[in-house]
Length: 241
Image (cartoon, rainbow, N blue to C red):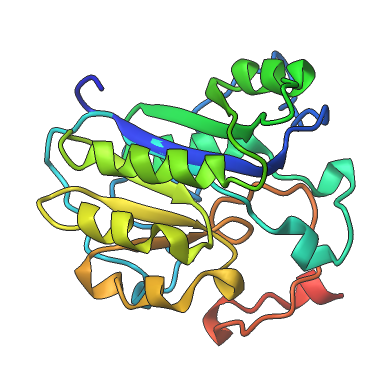
């Protein structure tokens, strides 16, 4: 990784399908967000994020770009059905959020299960247009190739500089995330708070930052029908009317 970089890691744990991610309006290229949800000048957490989920941001430190890693986001668990096109994550929003929140370039990786031998080219081409690096993987039937690859990637990052954002709810990555904390590196988790493994919350005191995909990243075009505990300072009645 080059200097001043964040790595964002994402995944699709299901066998790859031909459904392409939603593209942004215009050229299809991602752009840096500039609104109240975060701007390149801001290094601190978004104001809407409960402070109990956040570690202290470390401003003024020269860093390589963060790595963004995305694991399955369980949208189907929120909806109790397969999501419609307008209910799928806007992946360019995730990438833009990572750039804006920590104020640095992003290297975005998206891991795919291609054990069937098929690469869904419309999906891969859409990811490339959104400036993600698709990583198709294969293995034995039943082998969690995507999880294995993300675990290895997180372990490789221990010896390299750079911040890390992982989009996942899974406790399978707890050892690797824990090992990345400390030493001036910023580490964040992207997901739906109600589905995140509870042991991740215990890492907040060690500096792990938690970002909600709907509330903080705002990567959905509509309001998801989530049933969860809402801090009163974040309650917006208009969303329920």
